Length: 166
Length: 166
Image 1 (spheres, each protein chain N blue to C red):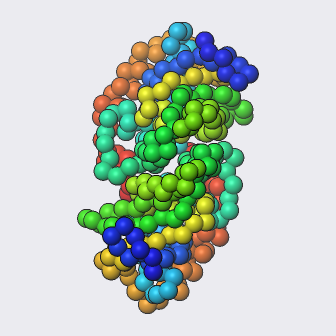
Image 2 (tube, helix red, strand yellow):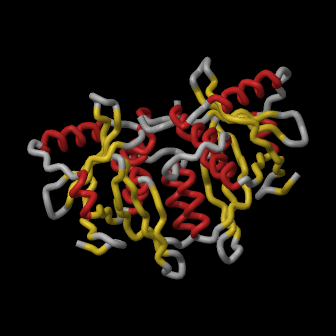
Image 3 (cartoon, chains in turn brown, cyan):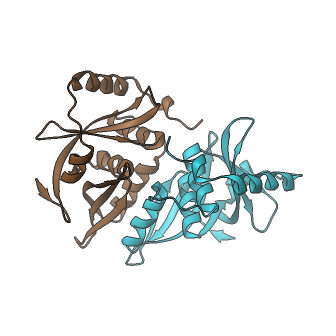
């Protein structure tokens, strides 16, 4: 457990991202590394594809928006330390991207969780969730294996064509 | 006219962004400020909405992806000088974002034109196009007034609901 601004932080792993076919809403699934709680976060199709493309190691011919963010930060010698899912209010999640600039000054930037996670997967940095967020929105899913399997299948079968500009 | 890396740069104004209903492809329309050539650029729906929301002065409750980029740059004391549409190859446009970091060092970052323009409208910075791009992809549209009118109508009638995460 790590200490956040005013809360304890739980280290999460990204299980995957997929479209929930019943609702057609893309979903990101995080899981606490040392526990059995899952955190589902519904996101926009664009942000979901930004994460899925990276997880699938699909290279696009031109930098996508989150690649652009990562390129800008590298050019500015700014490192991404980790991201935090900091809060949930009215079913809306809030997040912070922790960065260190060229002078090692710590910067905390507000972000939607979807953007923060799309950046985190590109930098392979840690993803944390505040304990109170997990308490309020975390789920203990019994038959999670099936769900994970569906994620993996989804990720195995996507291609750049699924996300290209139409 | 301004001098780019290896080409002359023409200052452009952003006429608007709208969905081309016949093809359902969103389009950005640039126009040269001191001439009558237009540059239409087809983009993804997400990037088009990022530009349209800003042009319409619609504030979203949480920072959208391009707001995040602008927030990051401000926090890092990096200014956006201007953007350049630098090339077109195989019907694909290329762009550069020119920035100055805290030490006034000029940085040129590769970008898709849609991302570059979404950032430019948030920073109210100049948009340039290379002369050879305008020569190859520029259009002199006779009845452009109708087109502009359609853009304006589109922009007058969009709302955050048209772009919200579904």
